[in-house]
Amino acid sequence: MVGRRVSDEQLIEIIEAAIFVADKPLSKRHLKDVVLADLAISMVRINDAITAIQTHFQTRGIRLVEVGSGYRFQACSSLSPWLSNLWQERAPKYSRALLETLSLIAYRQPITRAEIEQVRGVTTGSNIIKTLLEREWIKVVGHKEVPGKPALYATTKQFLDYFSITGLDNLPALPEQQQSKINQLLSDPSVREPSE
Image: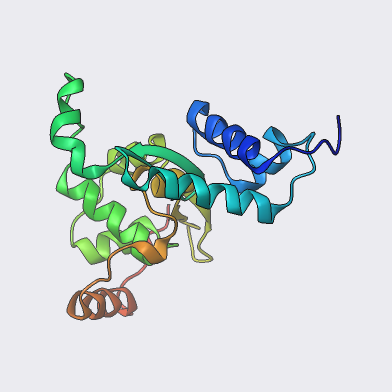
């Protein structure tokens, strides 16, 4: 079966169905190496098929969207007032502290907990970091070379997927005033990493 050929229409059907039934977003590489492994399909044809699927669903209630770890189908955000009635439970509410912590990690990664606390001006509870780690929105990407070697945190592909963005460059720009204040706080020589 290796090298078997399929028409463009069949390729579109296979890719569309694979993305539809997958329990997580599928990357082009995963489609080629796993789903289409026994077919002679170039990345150009995969790209063309994805573009055709996106075009087809452009005027429908669902869209094929690219997120951090690949492609997935999702409902149009404009339909959320009606679709939200399908779920009894409400989306979880996150505390301001958690959202501030996540924002700092997203915009300034890699960053330590002490640096987050310096910018926020308050202690960041271990339960906040634990929640973000459990949700797999952040991960430890190393340790800072200072006494105590504190963990450096960065966002994950699951963070990108959850917020439906393809990369950190899709985050809204911080206002210049906030950006300079954060830079000032993080460059303050009085800030010292605590020894653990």
